[in-house]
Image (cartoon, rainbow, N blue to C red; front, side, top):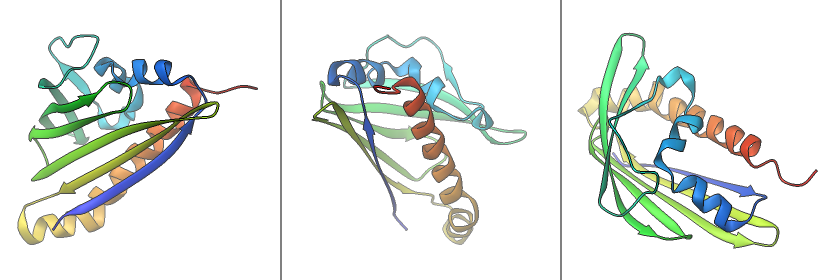
Length: 153
């Protein structure tokens, strides 16, 4: 079964500044909750590009470590990029990030299409845990983005 997660957040900062931050793969560390124990494996360039492969290590549960390999499949500089899972915990993962300039900032949109897999066990895991964990991850990210780009006071 395919699931969708959509988020929208206004960021009170210049579009070029917002893009530069999100186009830097290493910044994902700052946007991921410590509870996920997220680690980028190996070196990654400071600027993302289409075709870039990034390998992560995550621990969604104590004692359980998973490798997650994603590809930046499309980049429209300043406007959008897509990351897709090549190998990892999901049967399907497609995450589109869009940035729409507005007066005094940028509206950021996230659209995630995902499938857990694992048959009936995956259906149950999605209902009991995965959906809630993804919400917590994206809530944390929204809080971090608001701290990084606090806007005018």
